[in-house]
Length: 174
Length: 152
Image (tube, rainbow over all chains, first blue to last red; front, side, top):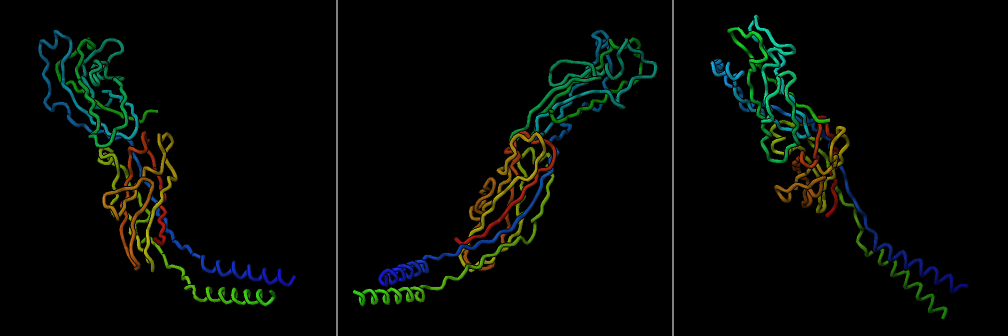
């Protein structure tokens, strides 16, 4: 019995001795930071506007039924897939006071728009399109909008100034 | 036999005591880290950011460490909030610069800096990689960055 006790003491002391040599202490410290980024997702700029010089209607315009105004380019940067809508239905679109239109048409519809070469449609409501999220390093995506005034929508188009104001609206695709 | 056992016991005790006293006392390393400035940041994504594909925040956060041993600081990022519809909501969108390897950014965090004992202040560069998020709707993306200092 005495021998067992002695052996027990020996074992315990040996374990203590070994344990004293293998103790290690880990130490660390932490600090936290928080931040947030607010994303607008879509950015639209007019890269190339329509000509500031008024277009004069010619006899050939009358014969063909429309007058070409030209093309504007809109540049879109986006981090999300988006929808594009173009129209001329706003305060900047007008025709002389004595103008008259075929049924369902107006100065806004007569400002026909061609978005990205898809073909001319009435300016109100205007054409639509979709676009995709940009990839790194691009300078955005250009969207071209050709404009013409469709005289066949008028039953009476007196002399004067005809204005078309083109508006592009870009929204996140649902 | 009994004397032999007693002798062995005494020797063991002496060895144990000896090891305990000879083994150098292990002192706890002193390692502290604190954020001096730039710990709470906000940024608005601009058209230029979108064209670049990322938001660079150089020297965004200033950190001070004190250490009496060789040390290393690592960072880990969590994405706390993001708009509904985010295609790839991942902490990997926020990248943390490595001062030991200038120009290198670690997505979601990683090694920031190592050093020798002393008190050292250093800046941390951050970068939000918009492309990592994929389809990223308008809204606020919130992150927490935890900096940890450890003995090397």
